[in-house]
Length: 196
Image (cartoon, rainbow, N blue to C red):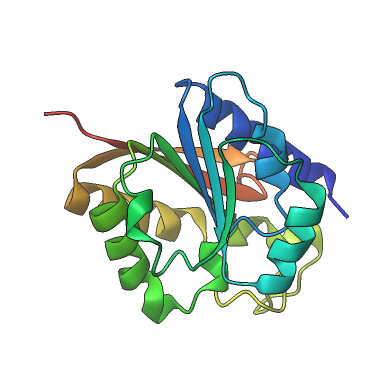
């Protein structure tokens, strides 16, 4: 079931991805393919690749995705993506990082910002500050598979450090039901590779 907050998140991510009219887009941790299904058939998009480590999830996506040229669905992890996916115009990591063990974030950083180096990378993750508005008890996460959920200050510090270390600029946006003090249900960082 897709919630209103999730639809809002996907609408914002989709608009951010399409803002630069990319020809090659990579969905890292594509899951059931909600974002890929929205992107498929976009005018000017020549290659759309989704990767996910879960075979069952990818099977569901394959059954929903219309066959079309330039669309690929692969079993792979964002921690160790295929090297032929380097240099895409845009990559998206939508509500994925919180499913990783925090000890693996440095591996993710190397894989995405050092090896794949997309021109633009859109990352979203839950905003822990918003959990009280969703009725999530303190010291619990929204989903049983989440390994962490960060408040905005921690996510922004992490993203700023990653951007600085790898030659990217980064801007932030609250997503979904923004509260004046608690922010949005999710938070988004948009990384753009610096041009020198």
